[in-house]
Image (cartoon, rainbow, N blue to C red; front, top):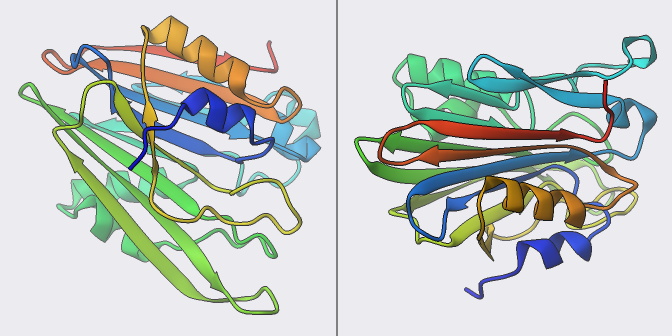
Length: 241
């Protein structure tokens, strides 16, 4: 598969929705995750990322303007026993609880499906990274609707992609929507292979600047040292307190 430029993928797409990038640094020493959110409505744009324990959560920038919180307030990132979970919804908690019960990433997500936001039926995208004893692997998932001719979902399609011993300087990128539209068209195919370069600040800056200026809301980036498990985090919010 061709290695794409993550920056170009973002610059040429005004509305990929929410996106997850997972990969490995050029020197092979760091496991890398990024998660961004975008918004078209005032409710979706009224959000920021804040740190919570080893993970993050979304919260309303202006609580007085918060409308329906059900699909926009959640914990996108949680950490359990060397596993970092990154998702675009409250299925983060589903995976976390499933792992605690001895289930796999894929088994945990069997209880979930796409979001109930007709007519878009937004896919649930999820990722999990495991850094343990100097080794690194990750997996990504998308749960999406099967749409009939009149736009109503028939069933849920489930896809899981696993990556062992990821290649240095490369990552995979999955996002909720192919592009802007009405209704919004769901992501198609397997995660895109993208190049990854630079330290955490350079990488964070390039991703943030590549996102559409009107629609971008927040960005999370984490670099995890594969040898030690220690990590650095960067959060960028369009709305600043």
